[in-house]
Image (cartoon, rainbow, N blue to C red; front, top):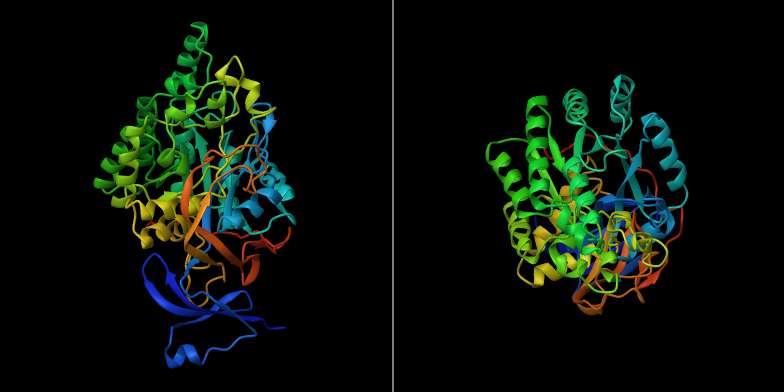
Length: 467
């Protein structure tokens, strides 16, 4: 049974264009676009018509960095694939790329199968996977080729967390060499974890146990050093590199220098680094624990370099690194020892709204907002033009966005399964009104109309951003 929905009268914004157009969706895809008021638009018909006059019509967001149900620090991220993808939909995101985890001593396949089992039949929106590679060996390297063939085309490595996810330079180089051959993209958590662990031990010995010391020991220079080293290893391997959650001025400078040299090096930042700072980590009565994530929040003066990097395209993507832990019972595991606070912040629901606020604040243009939140993450991770744009043939992942609605961000009103908001009390202008995932309304006039299991696993091609 064919179902057609027509969105009339909105301002359609993509990474490349802004145009008043009517959008026809049919059988889960964009069937047609026509400039509003033209004969072509008048000729479009559908069983259901939605009036988007005065609203933006934008592609569903693509959040290329989430951690649902991630085991970490003796606990689990508090959002399941069901609750996390529902919250994403509320925030105008219609695709997530989550991280399957290889445990040391186990195969990539075992890790990937475990994540498929968590997500299958539970997601409100479409999803894909990256693969965290924790144990580089001959068998793992062969498995990387197989995963690329079946649509898991990016692999994350860690220069941080010795004893958990950490890879040494030799392991990183071998994985990069493999990705240079198989077309995969290495994603790097760039912090010098060996040095950081020394500083953690010294801080605790001095009795420096509060959350703010988390930011002080994970120094910006150690992020920059690791970023530089990752770039050079990728250069030796002849491989592209994507550096996740860039937070520091010095790390942006390393990326900019590499890109000026013509290297295929890319960077993402996250809303927390653009809107929060070490002032939050220093909040009294252990409240700062809410803001413990890695890379850590930086002093406010780093924000200007991140915004500039987004404008100059030295940073290409804004993802959330959504990895929520409740304050009560989870973040509290680190009372008396900041190194035991589970690392991560909630944010999958807030990203599109925060970046729209950045448009109003003059940091970004409207098209750049869509570029860094929808189109480029889709291109970077092999989902374009199925995802990330509004064009005939694309999936009908479409958001009707009210650019004038005002809201106050709060744990009382958000839909993430976590007991605090990192942006509690923040006033922003702009709000998601209606969300379609493959043509199906999952949020309708601020009411949730989706269901668990609508979202499907989406294999990816290799990076489309290299050309």
